[in-house]
Amino acid sequence: MLQHVLLERDIYASEEHKMMQSMIQDFIAKDIIDQTEDWEKNGMVSREVWERAGELGLLCIDMPEAYGGSGLDFSFSALFIEELAKQGVTGPGFSLHSDIIAPYLLKYGTEAQKQKYLPIMATGKIITSLGMTEPNCGSDLRAITTHATDQGDHYIVNGQKTFITNGYMSDMSIVAVKTNVGTDHEGVSLLIMESTMEGFEKGKPFKKIGMKAQDTCELFFDNVQVPKENLLGDEGQGFKIMMTELARERLTVGLNAIGGAEGALKNTIAYTSTRTAFKQPIANFQNTQFKLAECATQLQLHQAFLDRCSILLSQHKLTAESASMAKYAATEMHGNVVDECLQLFGGYGYMWDYPIAKMYADNRVARIYAGTNEIMKVLIARGLFKELFAELRKK
Ligand SMILES: Cc1cc2nc3c(=O)[nH]c(=O)nc-3n(C[C@H](O)[C@H](O)[C@H](O)COP(=O)(O)OP(=O)(O)OC[C@H]3O[C@@H](n4cnc5c(N)ncnc54)[C@H](O)[C@@H]3O)c2cc1C
Image (cartoon, rainbow, N blue to C red):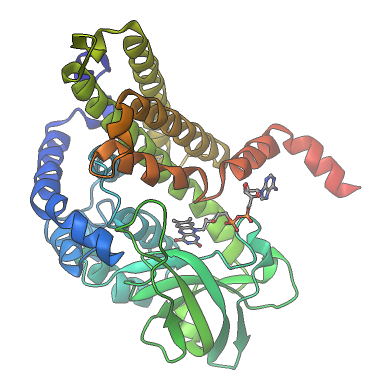
């Protein structure tokens, strides 16, 4: 029904996209849906689903084939993110691994680092995470206190990270540290840390209000010896790298939001067409029709903007401001759509067995992680007043 109303999306219109879409739908049906209840109980997914995604070429989709990727353009990665979100699949943290960590390595890694990690990441035989947030700072990453002391050919790392997606299952983590303690952002560097390194400990997966099958945990570093060859990018460049790469991360969160909103809307159209009240389908009430018409309109508008951002990302032209707008606007829209949809399910909408209930709980975090939506507005405003702020800094 929805497809009769929404415009066809040019970025997914090719035969190759259609083939990939049906392969992804098959993967979700065969390897994900039936496992989800167990994963939710365990607070994490299985290693098998990662390896299956690797076998199907669904990990590191837009990474060059020379490093084990599928060598496709970003629109195929975007399609995978949206298809998972449409079906409410939030357990496996594939996108963080493929669309965020892999590009960090690809862009800033040495040839030895790329050869060591990228091909095996594409197989799903190792799982990765990104450690930026600490118990005392999330929005203000300049304030991190995890530190790496220079010992000649290696660093000694001490500190702690929290809320780390894929953290418990991860074999390798890119960790933000201060190599120059006491300094501001210019003292931040990135280190590749393997979970088998002595002194690297993980907390238990957190109990969250949603995304219960996705593991999120703390990481602890107690005198961990990290060879200098594990420095990613130059010393002191970590903050700049993170700020550059966050644009891509924010776009992926926005894509997840439009996929999620589409899934919620489809579910609700089906439900309201069959559920009756006062001897008629509840879809027959004008309130239901207007609410869903508003949601479909919002979805359509956001799809158009996000598609444009995906194209700009492929052309290396996506700005921090546009990525922040995409993340902020699409996640707010997703939140509103899911809330309106849940209302139309009545009491059933509040029951965990109904996908809309999970969508409601799972979606809430999108306004918080990858930079809160308040921080997105700070970044957009910084662009609006760029010249003024530059002048003020000079004084
Ligand atoms: C499920 C989940 C998964 C996550 N995954 C990861 C991960 O893989 N890796 C990782 O490093 N982190 C991860 N995070 C952390 C996430 O990115 C942070 O929680 C987020 O950036 C906010 O930081 P904070 O929690 O410290 O909140 P705070 O920074 O303490 O913010 C609290 C409130 O203050 C507001 N605020 C702060 N500064 C400003 C300002 N300048 N102007 C206006 N308002 C402001 C915020 O918007 C927010 O509303 C995850 C978090 C969750 C919940």
